[in-house]
Image (cartoon, rainbow, N blue to C red):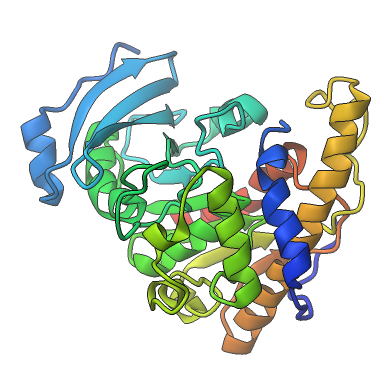
Length: 349
């Protein structure tokens, strides 16, 4: 992989972003004993949020499904959990977010990557929420007829961490990582709760959301799920658009270990018929190369702008740019591996 510390700025043109928004959903689909359940009353009191652990299912020796009731959203959220290799001492937690579909489709870290085997020898809790499709993992201003109540910033930064720490015996050290639409969300979440995360990794995300082309892109992505962005951040003049623009709020990332990556959109080593995610299907490969290439080329421009912004602010970051590749899971798996050095150092894992 070609390593560039920071890239040059580029402009996202509205027409390209409109195409990007229309295609994002298609690309996202390329695609020792049972744990003791904590008392809901006891867990609810830890964060003072009214949220609580509903129950835990053991899927395997190291894989659990936690079900946490969110008071803010009025529903119970499933979390896919990978437990540490050694649980004899409290361990840190990596929150690993899915993309546009929120894990409610087949495009999940556990289904599309080697996350389970990759973390097999690592002393970290890995927690992935299942839900939040087309929500940008943000707090929406009001319920949406199609997407319901979304208060993901509240859930991920206030309601969930104390419940995770109590249930998993975690040590309170956290990091967060995400891809595509959640590649921008993880930066915003880190900015909203800078003392919560010691590290953040964004793969193929677009941090600029309040410029005219950025707003058009967000509107098209949310619209692909039937949602209305005026229910999310209000009209374009609403200050929530600026407050949730990770590029403009980048100063709040100071002190957080950062890893940001993107590829050029040109075909790379995973854009071949022998890629197991393609399964020898020429149509699937064509979709990955063409659709995934267009999206990745656009997010590459976003990432270069963010890199320049971080450089101008003097905020250290590991930025990986310049290697070929499309907007697809083979590269995000590579990103997870590559970013682990940064994240593990931040977590002390």
